[in-house]
Image 1 (cartoon, one colour):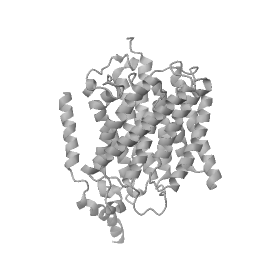
Image 2 (cartoon, helix red, strand yellow):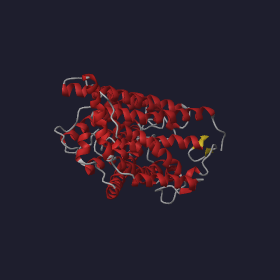
Image 3 (cartoon, one colour):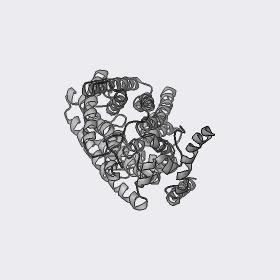
Image 4 (spheres, rainbow over the protein chains, first blue to last red):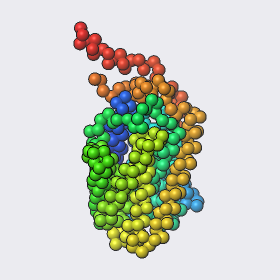
Length: 410
Length: 43
């Protein structure tokens, strides 16, 4: 094993901080979208997960996700329980030029934001205690295994050659599908006359989207695990796809509704960031433009379809993260090129049609497992504590009913 | 040390399970804080 590279380590530590900031950014993004009586409870979901998963990841999460394989490439063993054996020396398996602890911390931030993404689906009606139990179980039983499948060199999808640079399947598809299942199982919000509620604070949401965009540079470019050319490619493709998706979404809303939506710019940028996540270190900037354009159209359509359905995925988590994650994973199988990253693979356009099949298999497996496991977890949690607040609490707002606090005094 | 940390976190989980899910007593308190403002203004 080589020595620690100071440049790589510095970039990974900074990236860890960037990704950490995404979770408060998500809290603002979601917080602005809900009604004013639920803004604190919605922000608390993300902020509490920052604390909760930080502890569970150290205790057992990292070992289950990245520990030595327990067999069949499904999950890691508990050899690294409490980070036993994970220290300042590099890990030859994951990141040979940075301290193993730095890699662990970087991955911790991914583990934190993934269950936080789901919370947008059941916003404004989920009991806090049920949310806590669900999050511990989901992080342990859904996130950790899927991360192992895709990112451990012994994972079964990793063996098949799936390309997921920074979590299109592990983070976005898994959370997006879980959000859809949660929205269906928790049920619609009480008394909604329209399929969606008006955001109570659009500037808050735009600020949140800006922080997400900023943090995503760490999310994707940090996933190069080094201060190198692939990191630069990932940063440029990330920015380009976000920009193109925002332009596309705004254009569609302008044509469709007659005005260039500010909220559309924010949501469109997030959709672009989601879609480029699995592809960031494998495609060219031109490929990122096509991916951003495509996901802008696909996710805009998905959000319209959701509005016409009876599904109350309150903040469109499935339409943006589920559909955007799947689209990005497929697009990776189309646009990937070893000219950008020799450690990757070529995609369909570079003569490797089989890669598209691998991506499709990965999407199917992750979506199916996340859906089934999420449903089982919600059923079990509901046996312990009802997952939904009562009608009175919902009408009063979760800020008062669940947390005894209000966001705005006047 | 790891065992102690696990036990500690398990204790937190248990506390979350046992604590009442909602704080019925204080639901009426926060609106009272809001209504205090107009009352002071009227005085």
